[in-house]
Length: 175
Image (cartoon, rainbow, N blue to C red; front, side):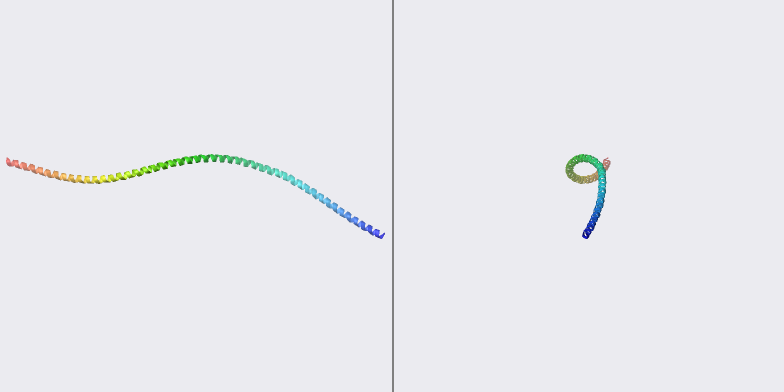
């Protein structure tokens, strides 16, 4: 009976420990269940926030995407205009280059003509200088001859005057 009483006490002790452990386990389970409910609520809350925030961000980015698409369309239009302007400018540059080539050809022709004209001008200047030199000589001779003529006329006048006097004297002598 003592053994049995000791066994009963021991079993009673084990049952009490088992009940305590079960109570602790139940308390832990309740605590974990509460934590699980809290976590689930937080997860639901976070998911709802994420969905709302995702929708807000998506709407924001869709708006921005629309703006960017509009800007891209505007830039495409500007690009097309710039491309047209570039082509017009390229055609104009080609025309101007062609005109420049023509003008250069004219300049070369005029330069050649100018060179020939300058050569002729040099020849004419040389001829003019030669003619001026000849004219100066002729003028000098003409002046000299004019002086000689004046001198001869004076001498002829003197001779004529002398002759007239002499005739006059001879007439008077004959008379």
